[in-house]
Length: 151
Image 1: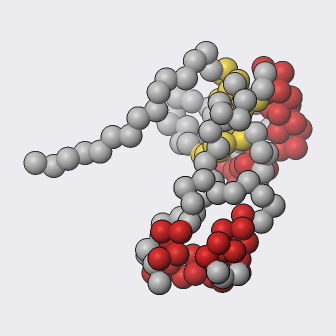
Image 2: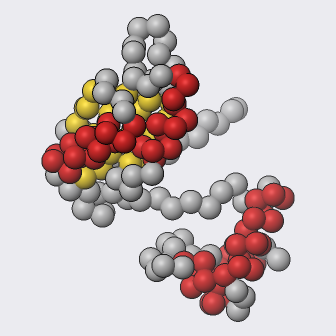
Image 3: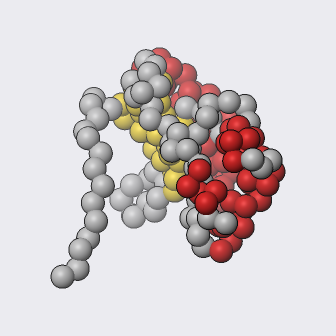
């Protein structure tokens, strides 16, 4: 039963229906593969299936962290709008902490600074949020994983 997990490629096929393409090599239908993965998730065997965009490899060389001041009652709506943009890789709520007026953060990727600025303007127009700050990245440091060992 869990042999299906071994057959899922590390890199999803970049096609319109990746589950159908993977399932074909497994001898099952795309619907069966999706149903099986949902069952595995319900059983706890799979935590999640998600795509990871390595933005630098996709030629998105400019990044902007944007902090937004959204009304508390508007967080869900605004966050959904922001995260619907393909250029947005992260969108999350943070507490104001009593010293910071911004409670919604988004990470925007573009091929140049103007791309990022255009997305910020479009998000502002679609959400109606006018109070925001944009911070452009200068350079990216190597990302590393760490684990805590108890001894």
